[in-house]
Length: 318
Image (cartoon, rainbow, N blue to C red; front, side, top):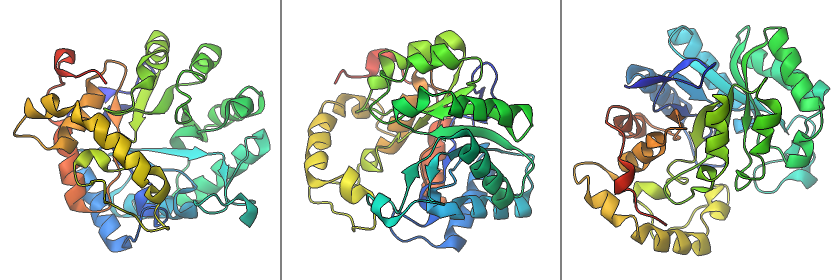
């Protein structure tokens, strides 16, 4: 597995990491904890050194599984990136938009409270990377979340501070790196072959400040594995029922047609491998966090971390 430093101040990480939303047991269809644990172990076996989670994934269950991994394997071989701000502790049913009862809470007091809860679940003294979990811009224009990150870092509760950029707000939130590059070591961003808005302003800004970039949704919720078509449907308990609705699938399928020359250029590689390699080929991007629920998915994802980057001349325009 190839490795890289996560920006100027972040830890050294694998180019392909592990996205731990799905193993939380909510929003991605059925899961089996025993299989999830095998997937986590396989990730470490394959050279993965970063596991990305959030307190809200499975309402704490994803972090609990990672705590079990630490118990079984120790902590020295990987870093944990978690998130806070999507408040499931105090949200009511009226806040349920299909993901469970969640509300955005970015007060200083709440963020410190949420980190303490995560530290207890993970059974660690410090979280390697703590990211604000995709808040609206107006919450980020207040002092409270940044004061929370400063205090948590000063107290040693978190080692690195990050911001998960809200989806489709990559340009609108890019200025936050100019304003807060003193505290932000890392950002996480939605980026894939079919969604490249981050290239316009956000990536140049991150490179200017030496901020590490974690790429989420690199396989577009599984669409870029090539396993879905216009008749694919998902259960109402699966967030892809909304995020990969019939209308969205049809649009993505049309966009995907223009990518065929890229896939044809690497006939020995799967669509998923090429899609992941695309993301880490951008000079601003350090690691991708595709989700995995099984060891087999981990193995397929990790293949992208062994190869060379894709030359920009081979990447079709959208």
